[in-house]
Each structure stands twice: as C-alpha cells, then as structure tokens.
Picture (cartoon, rainbow, N blue to C red):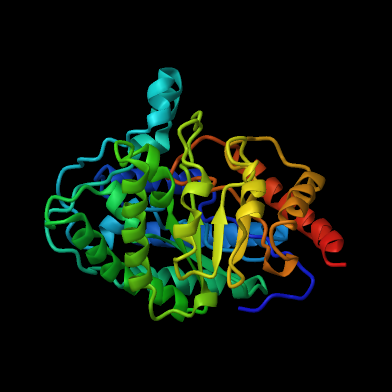
Length: 382
C-alpha cells in the first residue's frame, strides 16, 4: 500500500475496547454457556462498525476491526485450528512480577486475564475454521468502505507466540511444533493479504518470551529460540509481498515493573531478518522510551520501516499532541521521515474485558496520536 507524500501515517497495534455487552457475551462463550450464535455474530458486526467509525473520526491513518471477534490477540487460534484440546500447561510466569508480589496480584486480578484460556497441543495442528478469518476481513472492509476509508490492517498471532501460550504435548521438538503452527497460520495470513489489508503478525515471543517462558535460558539460547521463531514466521508469510507485512515486537502488555525486559539491542539484529517490511515496537513507556538512542546507534536496515510507540496503552493520561510530535522528531534522527510511522506501544484491550484503561480515553489518545503525527510531519519534511 502506498502512503501520501510528506506524511507520517498513524496506526495502532490491534486490540481496542469492546462494548460492555459484547464482553459479557464473549465471556459466556468462553465459560461454555450457550449463546445465540446469530445474535453474537450481529453484535460483533455492529461493534466493528462502531470501532471503525471511531478510528476514522480520531484521524487514524491505518485502521482495523479492533479485534472485536477475538477473545484475545493469541488464544483465539484454539477455535480456528485443531490440536489444542489438552489441559493448559503454561503458567504465564513473568520474572519481573516475582520480585514484586503485589504487582503480580494486580495483574492476575484483571478480569480479562482471568478469563483467557490456552489449552495444550495434544494432536496434529490443522485449519478447521477457514470462515472466521475470511469473515473478519469481509466485515472490516465493509465497515471501512462505509466510512470512506481504504487503509486497513488486521493482526494475527505469530507462530512463536502461539507456541509460547500453548504448551506442546504432541510434537517431538519445539522446532517441529512452531513450524506446524506456522503452516496452519499461513491460511489466515494469506486471507488477510487477499483482502487487500496489511498483515500484522504479533510477536511478543521475540521480547516478552525472554522474561516469561524462556527466562531460564541464557541470552544466546534465547536468541537461538527466536531465530527459529522467525524462520517459521518467514515460512508462513512466504507468499505475501513484503510491503504488505508488518510485525509487532512486544515486551508484554501488563502493568508490571518490567525491569527484567531484554534490551532491544540484544535482539534487534535477529528481528531484522524477519520478512515484514515494517516493525512496530514499544517506545513510549518508561522502560523503553530511551531506546530511540540505541536504535540510532545501531542503525536500521535501508529496506525496513519503523513504527515506534509514541502513545502508551496502560495509562489514562492523554498524551499531548506536542509530546507525540517531539517523540516522533527523536525517531526522525533514527530513520528518514518517509520510513517512519506513528504507533501505540501495544493493544488497549489484549484480552476481552481487560480493565486497565477507560475505553473513552482510548479514542482521545488516538486522536492525539493523529494530531501529533501531523505536527511532526510538518517539521520533519523540510
């Protein structure tokens, strides 16, 4: 997809707050309570209409469906792929929360986290629901067209993050497991691309994985792990044009201290080997906002675009457009402005019912993002 000259496009990383009534219905589904399937489908469609309209009104350049149909950004795959029928074996351990038990209690107590489900893989992984991904795209395109908006993206779980959340009790090796996931997820990635949307592959495994599931690994062992994950990702998106791909690098969207987060300097060389042209990563929160200087020193490959977070999704503070512009100006020292996009550190509601932020504030923050991007573009394109 092209971009208008002398602009810095604004976007976000996927999840947006779902309406309260949709949350209740989706929780019921997750709890195994019978619901009217037609009513659920209609409410998801109307919620997509609402969230698309709000993004357009906020002035966001590249929009999505807010993940309205998904219970979370990664665990939704258990309903679209076979194999995930065992008991959950993942503990969702976060090394930083071990040091601060009260923070751990607060994170664990969030309703959205309590409701998520990630059973283990106990049999071969194959696509069992091809309609879901296609319907997601049909509804997003319909809603975007109704709002006279063309630039859309859809996020999808990476092979690595699926392997992180869903324990393997079937495949002989982790490599065999992650490549099986990759081949199965290929259908969804290609369905998104076929609809003319940008495919965003969510990759918390490449950063968050270091202080969660792979905390016991040495740094070099972790680097080997994420190399395999990226090889699997590249296998899965092999048929999609590079300019239609972007990936989100994430250290975990939860209000913890994050003092065990791995530095971007320790992983970025491997991240650059992934096929997606654009890389989104955290740049607004207090643990990673300094890393623009790290990236400036290390440099960005000439064939890559970057989309740093200049808005923080955990706080009800609405960033001033001038703050957004100043942050983007710093990133303008890292890459040329025509390779720069403006983003959000992570999703605003990564699990259905997450209660970290006021839903109304979300769209005010997105409006500030769009306004700040315009300010920065006027200063950076000289």
